[in-house]
Length: 217
Image 1: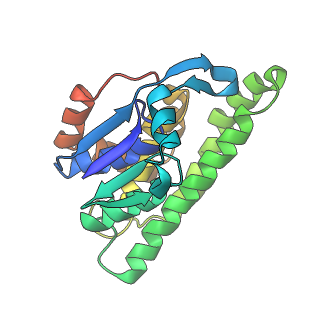
Image 2: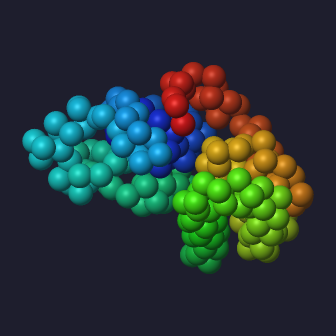
């Protein structure tokens, strides 16, 4: 397998976490880039632009990430995550569990989109909005999210680690700009916090953190 993305965590990191948890060897291909203007999300990425111009990224719609499996290209980060989760038996033991896991992942996507809307607020409003987000809104959203989880201690759904657990872990420990604040919010919900602690205890995941490339974000 070959996972292709830029040299950052971003949209590929949840997939990398799944691969690390399952001790899977793969080609972690990363396009280098440099920041031109972060406020406008402008980057210099000559190798990516060259491959795009030469038609090498058409099967991923000229976007990243993509996963190559036996010569086949899977694009879209969520599709990649679901493929990997199913490959490693992390989508539950029944169709109902599959749907419950998928619904939790989609609920997390809603939380991410709401946070991105806060980040787009005018600068003079953003600081106060961020404070409200981490102290109130995120706490409320995680409390709502916990209602979708089974009350079995450490797993979101069923009796085994699933994509839902990894997605929640990735949200709280990787996605937000202020990880300490997101952890503080998560710690106020026992169900969510136990899920995070359980994923964090996985030895192969901790080994990945020790060895993964250093990136800007």
